[in-house]
Length: 298
Image (cartoon, rainbow, N blue to C red; front, side, top):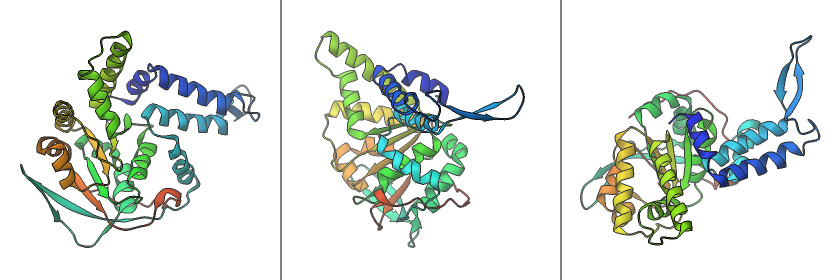
């Protein structure tokens, strides 16, 4: 699904549309610098003048894209650091190979010396996003709390949401959508509307270029029937070379125990499995200055 189609579909959601309207009213309509027009004085002379966005409109467009992509607005802090060019303290990771079978997942270290998360992976991925996304290069990030996994998802969304369809979602919300779409027992009008909305969301989830899933601190519990649907979505995306980036506090073996081998195999087989090792809490650190690195696909 291309970016324009994705935006059009998302803006049909009344809640998304309402949040976008509120953001424009808050940021643009009340701006004294441009009197609510969203444009600053243009450049040029004579009859041809090029209008340029006021600062309020630039901020609104970022918020609008975040809302459309489902990214929490706390990512604006990271957006400000990216624009300012301030440096983000990087963290180490080890790339591991996941040997998946019916009963177990074994981690095989490909290289003992650690890589840098932003410098060696995320920035090169963004720089070569067209190739990476066309190949369906998916990523699994796992490790302890406050190592920058969720902010890595924010970073990918911020850097790619202008050119690709990107959906950020906590994993538990995906389970809720699956349950509402297929297993809601209530026959009321409200339940029917919820089912239709959930089915529309699952259709988007299947088709977006990048699906960014944040598992959170606790693995959600779900029924076997939900697991079957999750497996179907995972296989469909991976089979169609659709990117999944999954961030989790849990090791792959925990996923194997909780989700079952079929779901795990569909989601994380042949992905970049990255074990986040050490580093500071990134939530209030500055962004690492961008450098040029070549991206090597799988």
